[in-house]
Length: 251
Ligand SMILES: [Zn+2]
Ligand SMILES: [Zn+2]
Image (cartoon, rainbow, N blue to C red; front, side, top):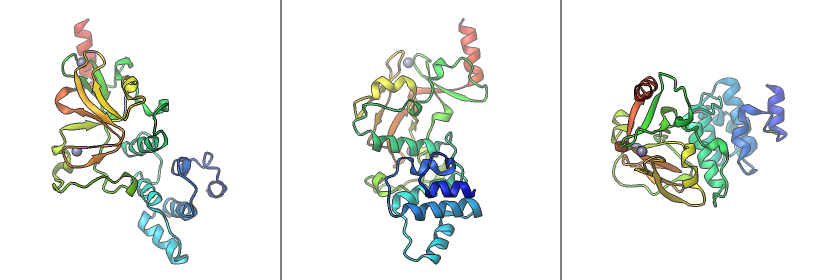
């Protein structure tokens, strides 16, 4: 832990993997060292962000964390002070960072795209796959769905607020007429070089939804940035096992 803390302070963020994702894309700033100390306290002493930050400010009253770091540390807390690259929260964060980094979107890192379920031969039986309602092509897996009920975003991600109240029953999800997902490999040709457009089924070209790198508002009132939106009415939910059976039956 001591070595790790030292390497973070020295700026060697890659070898200090527990926290590297915070700093990977961030610009150097005065509040970084405060953020590093706060993150260290959270992990080492199992503190919430608020507790750790209050502790730091007790010792050094002028210690300040900017909004961006504050949001990242709250995200870190939400992930249990572990960086879980498979968690939807992390995926959403990474996508937002990619959006900032590639304003022209000339090139997208490969790892941003989820594997195409159509190219995966064995879908685990417990996993739900979503298929085109018209042609039945497999489009994305349940693990690609990103939740959008995170409470707070830093100002850079803030969007116009609409007056219509957000319902909280069922986590607000009952009001969502779309899935917001991470980009899947088959979308790649459609995404490059444009800020928004339609998402069509790669097999039958049924209109499934749309994407907006600048973000889009869900029917529940929340903004998702960037947004890869699939209308629930255009896809069917199928368990992995049934997919295998269906394919076997068709052969
Ligand atoms: Zn289709
Ligand atoms: Zn929604």
